[in-house]
Amino acid sequence: MRAAAVLVNPRLFLYNPPMRKNITILDSTLRDGEQGEGLAFTVSDKIKITRLLDALGVHYIEGGWPGANPKTDEYFKLVKKEKLKNAQITAFTSTCRPGHAAKADANLQNAAAAGTPVVTVFGKTWDLHVTDALKIPLKENLRLIEDTVRFLKSHKKEVFFDAEHFFDAYKHNPEYALNALLTAQDAGADLLVLCDTNGGTLPQEVARITGELKARTAAPLGIHTHNDAETAVASALAAVQAGAGHVQGTINGYGERCGNANLCSIIPSLQLKMGCRVLSAKKLTELTQTAHHIAEIANLPPHNQAAYVGHSAFAHKAGVHVSAIQKNPATYEHIVPELVGNKQRVLISELSGVSNLIYKAKTMDIDLTKEDPAARQILQKIKELEHLGYHFEEGEASLELILKRMLGRHQPLFELISFHVTNEKFAGRQMLVEATVKLKVKGQEIHTVADGNGPVSALGRALRKALAADYPAVQNISLSDYRVRVLDGASGTEARVRVIIESRGQHRTWGTVGVSTDIIEASWHALVDSIEYGLLK
Image 1 (cartoon, helix red, strand yellow):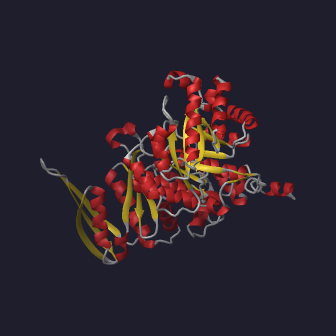
Image 2: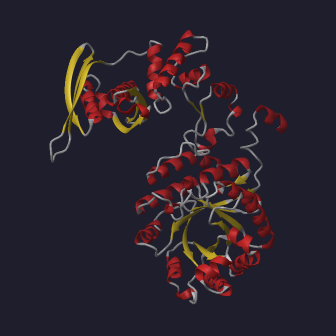
Image 3: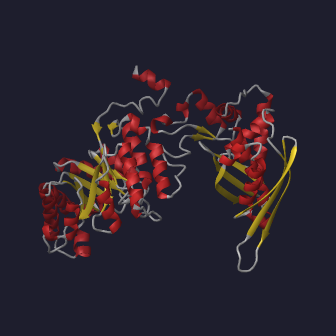
């Protein structure tokens, strides 16, 4: 039966494998992730992200280094008031200072006083770092590890020992690296985390070394990888395959340099491909939304091509591909997108075939078949527009209006008579921008004037003002994003430009597109489509 099912749909065994073992996840977005360039969370941001991660079902949330700064201390104070259902908050610190006892170390006292049930402590395992960075005897470093772990255990903490630079350490001096791990284990560490701190260890090396350590240690093993060689996710999966039962990483792969292992790729790969229990099936469907929400809090655009959760992760453009997925999605999709809360998308472009158009029309509740002569006429029109510079992947509302216009299913809500935009600049004063719009609405000529902080702003205000009496819902439509791209830069100031406008209504957002050699005209076309689409919906 299993063999027959695989022949019908190769994805069946991928997302329904026999469950083999439980894997715990530690999310370090608030600590390691925040070290990424351009990232800075407020205390409020950190609390919001904590709630999102807890709701997702993450097991541990690393909140930062107690005592490092007032913001982190405020976070640990406030997070105690949160009624978390799934996650345990984890503090982060280092082994005690050389020549000092752990009980007298300020960092460890802060970690113990943070009130978290778990403390992650990192220590040196690479003899190079001990002798050249700390400049202490190798034996003294082992004392630091032992004293630190025992001190934290005496405070009833669950202790994770992060073996910093472990893979480099093991390759350079395996005996000492192992000795450092065993020292932490014998002192009572609950988990030994193998860290690829420089991010340059390849997956096959991670698998080999993790397997060797699994046979020589008694404590559970974890993995913490960085992405400097673009292998952090692969290395984390290899470590689990070799025996690790705990994975650390960040949402969207945030982190210093090239980032940390991306949990948004690791979690579904573990669960859907490797048969590991990580999250419940229901929680897994919230992964895409969580990734995008945290990106919004971070004030960073989500990566469209991100595996599993990216906007383009299940987007199809080639006509042959679209024709195939209409027969069986498994032909070009490795999992069912909805399993991770994503969805299948079909793009329309000059690469499209009729299959793309039919699929897209269906999503817009437009009846269109391959046999309809209008289908190929519409497709030809779309290809001509794309050749001129139109781009419908971010302007799907404009595409829907084109389909309806060519099929005779849409009449314009208004007709442009003229518009005029003026810019005035006086010395020592701000630029003054004013737009005049003349429209014919329901047989009546309407003339309005409005100002704005730019020509597009002024045109949008004048247009909404002209339509407000007949279409009051226009006041619920606002411009939320505006992007311009020069399409043929070699033409200089005569270049054609493409304008993408994202608009927002009460319950949805949509994108429209306009193209012209005049940026104001291109903006007007995108703006008109935006208003018409918003009113129709």
